[in-house]
Image (cartoon, rainbow over all chains, first blue to last red; front, side, top):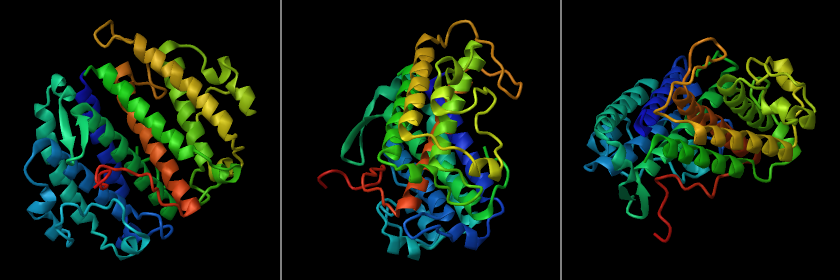
Length: 173
Length: 185
């Protein structure tokens, strides 16, 4: 087993959780915020897709998928920085929550690009450093640890909010 | 980077996040449930440590949980019952869960984590396969477990952060996700 296998398993598992969370949610439920400072399931899942898209662009180069038509498909600003971090309660309230279908298709595209990249990563490359977002020196291994931490935390949140809104719906893990 | 180093790094990151997520919470905040079928922060943090303890001690080393052998159940004033990891609780059980103090939760989870890192240190990914069975009966290897514990602990950690924000109407000012503006510009 290599570190890459840990990452691939984590990504498969957490996106599986997201898929089961999205199943059976109405547009209203998807957009519901438990409180003005708290994110909706739709927002969380969209943000997760944006996080993975942005990191994969950092690792693979080129442009984010967001800049290649996906922003338009989700009816949002094509700004590559438009990804959710630092939004105010007012911005959250105005957020144009995508549909389940829009979210699933964007995530599928992002994950497919990730799979291509993961297929070519060799163990020794995990020690290579990149200048993440032009400011932070990180090894590729650190990027993956960070992504696992962030994406898993958000997947857990999406599952939690669904349970909060709808009551216990059976295991999603 | 070896798989062991990578797992160690992921576990350290998880621990660092958990400590920040729990920092400064009052007893009332720890025990608060947003809804009758939603878990409190104390329950989630306790469950995380119980699960990790069960895997490392019982499943892989066939010995009693630290919950019992190290006296933690007694300290937390809870039953010395290895089967109780927090799975399958009814709303009534959640409502009557006696939330431990932050110090006790952190003490127990730290002891569990030390034992996990010790087990990770001794594990040889290229050595003889370790035979173990998950509580649901299927064979599970240490590598399966380590991959799983990373998603399980982080997903629960994210829930703690969410409930904290929900309770406090708190925006995480220290959040430095990958997309936040870089320091100094």
